[in-house]
Length: 54
Image (cartoon, rainbow, N blue to C red; front, top):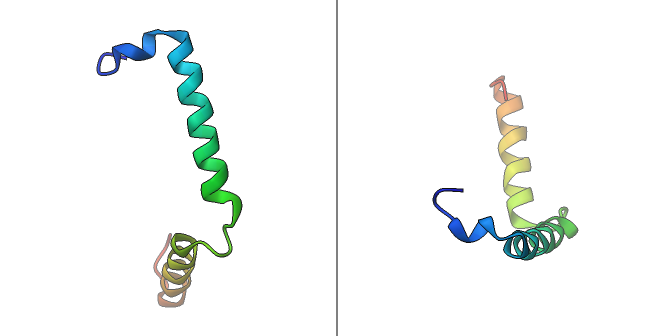
């Protein structure tokens, strides 16, 4: 953790873990309606149609 010395403190690690988990949960909660998900679906579908390996 050379770049983040504050992460040597277990309390800070726990706070970061909770925030990260909340972010991921929110980001993935409506995956069908998420714009990034729709974009990736279009890109993958197009690549498959063109025969481009993923």
